[in-house]
Image (tube, rainbow, N blue to C red; front, side, top):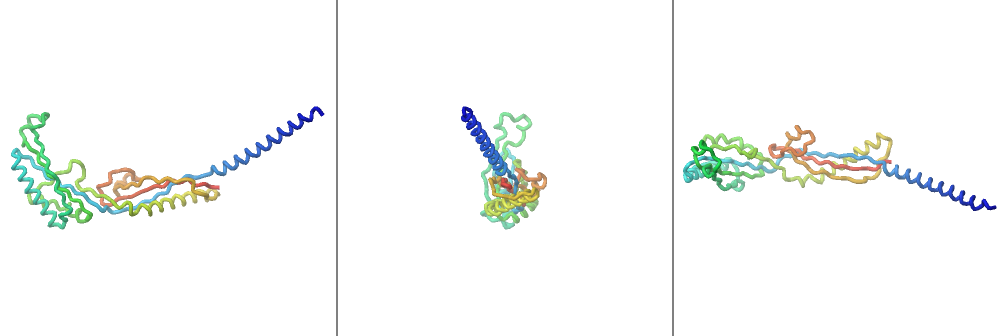
Length: 248
């Protein structure tokens, strides 16, 4: 009879270990079931046309006499504006920026040869900012007429003088997000089907940044990214949705 307490303790320990093993087994089974998931990406792309164009026309002269240089700039400016208006560019779309004057002799780093060149570099920027992108593109190819009128348009040292922008992203955002989400789900469903599983709930999803790149840049860089996006009339808009789905 003295062994009875020990027997009871032994039985209790066996039962305890058995129950713990059962609970751990079920917990591991549930964990494995809950842990089965698939990560997918859904892509949506649109090719769009720019709806805003900015064209910077730069007139530049060098003169020793500042007043003569200023007169020359004013004459050239009038010819440019007349040329634009005659070709149906709206006056409201023409922005005359301030004249820039650089006194080259005021630069202490100028060498002797440069000191013998005309003193003043006078620059006038005329900007056209318009939603009529087709018209501005057409007129931008007609600047030879200005050359015939004695007006030389200087190259823009900061890049392409004509730039195209797409500003209506908010108009297409909802549809593109919906399409990317649908494509992500279809990719997850395909994965589950091919692996003899069932697609369950969406666990989480993340939306990537919208990117707008030139159509030609998108072709050369594959997935687009952050290539220069203002040189082409046509753009590629892209967004990616990353999603995680449970499968069972």
